[in-house]
Length: 129
Image (cartoon, rainbow, N blue to C red):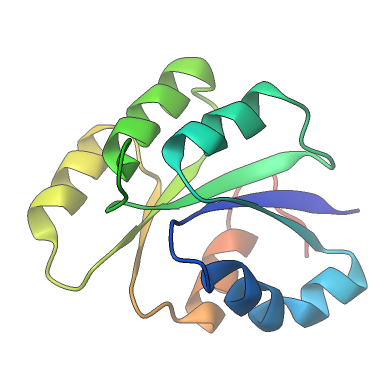
């Protein structure tokens, strides 16, 4: 069974980095990765069908336009059951606190420790593997 992850980051190299680090899981059919370069694009993706089932949205906080905190609040308004993990810069304690209050289920610090991230993903209620 496959499940989807929506990664939201305005950095152009992020999709390739995630594809490389999740190569084995993608090949095994565990995870299907989807990407959005902005909060607005992420909301558009959520409004449509993401297949297979979306189990988590993983978003950076700092983005132009709609930032990750605004995106988090809007996602929680539209789909309160969807886990949202926030990617934060080291030492970004105030934004982490606000994201936690707004419903973020977990935090990932840049640079991303992909082994730790994969462990967090496996602990999600609707995760596989």
